[in-house]
Figure 1 (cartoon, one colour):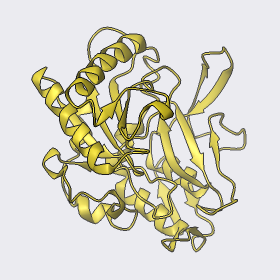
Figure 2 (cartoon, rainbow, N blue to C red):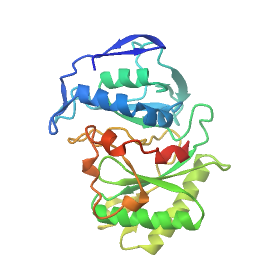
Figure 3 (spheres, rainbow, N blue to C red):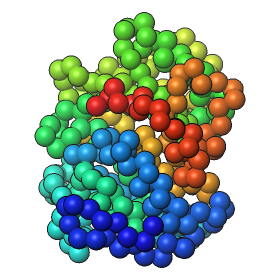
Length: 286
């Protein structure tokens, strides 16, 4: 892939396709662009109209290389990339960009973006999130315990008649998400999620905890719901992560959540084939 044409504007040219972005895996910028080009139809609905934070590594995932988080949109970015001006919790205005089409998506990947991080709400209703995130972080624990925590969370949600979906984070943990389509903004979401998390921990107190202090967790998994807050961002499904193996935050079926699950097998080279023509299980969030 060296060029891309869009009905919304002139031809988009890509540069340095042979640059190795993931040295440990040997994957290039061309591989990353090809992945995002092929997954765009599934990914874009999860990005559309959400204020965006970009995780950029212009020289790839290499020790000592530049690695920064970009919220403000540089003035030199093309005018056809939409922006929205919003204030931080501290009152500082930020010009967030929106990734609403494939052309914008690929332009940003060509600029060194590896991971796209989104708000929990869309620009039409910035005070109201439309999904809830349960971040299952094994950290000092094990992935097997993360799986057990996710399954217990699934049971609690199911008992309440709430549908949840699960994905790998693209790193070491799991994300479980549900829709939020009732009254209430971020505070209401967070309080509800805290209550659910406490119920999970009560069932498996030796496996999971809601303790924020790392030193107090022991070898338990951290069930984190505190990211459900305005201005915080989440990793959407299908995005690549800045890991040596170029792993993907991959949606999985609940039935596949078990001892044989290996998050490292989902990469920019394997994910599209593994997904096949399967419908997006995360479409229920939309």
